[in-house]
Amino acid sequence: MPNRIDALRAPLLIAWQITRDCDLCCLHCCTESAPGKPLPDELDERQALELVREIVDNEVPYVMLCGGEPLVVPHFLALAEALGAAGVDLKIETNGQRLDAIMAERLARLPIRSVQISLDADSEEVYRRQRPGGSLAKAHAACRHVREAGMPLEITFAPTRVNIDELLPVIARARSLGAFRFNTGKLMRIGTAARLWNTLEPTETQYREFRAALEQQADVEPGMELCYIPFDIAQGLRQSLADPPATMLVLPDGRVKVAAAVPYICADLRRDSLADAWNAYRDAWRDGAMIAAAKRAVQDESSHPAAQRWTMLRAVGV
Image (cartoon, rainbow, N blue to C red; front, top):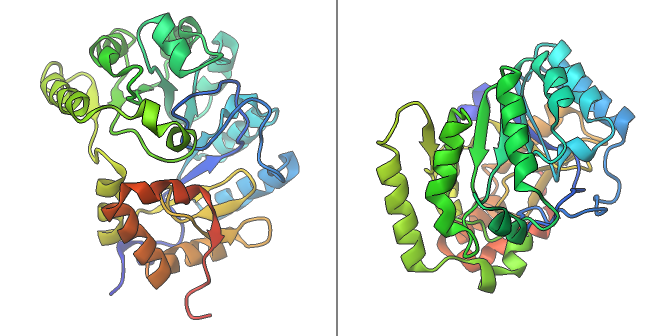
């Protein structure tokens, strides 16, 4: 049976992790990013700009630049500006530590759909515990720079046993900073978070109270959207199995991952064209091994850490 994405000649969104390097050592990181730890063979500037050309040629309308921390990449602005100059809408996902007024001014010249900044606490002490090496004051300043430059601001909050009690103050802070959207949900058991799971995972009681607080806050003020559905990986994968998303996840070395919570790679953009990679992605959602892995991830949360052990998915029909 055809999927909705089979009718599309290209993805509607490319989520491009341009590096695994980062300037923070976040306890909850789902990509295992850390300072000075890029992936081997990450795309260099020339290779990355070649991928930009393919994105433009294939008329992909929307790209999210993320990481790791995208702003640590020397050619970050070259990529953003090349995409923006071609009319591609952009979302920038950042921790905000390097997003000053000058960077905000540069980004504001581009077709920015949103800048997403993580605020995982509302006290400096808790923020530094969850995001070692980070400054909450810098993150707040980055939010203000985004709004002063006229760009839409999104806030994200990753709940852990460390910070979950600060949810309501962070929601209030996000509103005061002028965010139009607040993103959260259950902590993902992949990456660094999986290694620290026994000390990070909130209790069932904490999650019940967390969900109840979100439902209450959703009715407080319509000016800021609260996004927490799907609440966990299992819900998201169920939706994807029923209706695969028109999204391509590109890793820093150019490989294409079918979904964040499963281990399968379906293409390598260092050798495959974007069009071929999109065909492989669409085929992957009909592949028996991929579907079985997604169903395991839905049924068994303990399988989620395996998502970081990447395996090339054999092309359908080969």
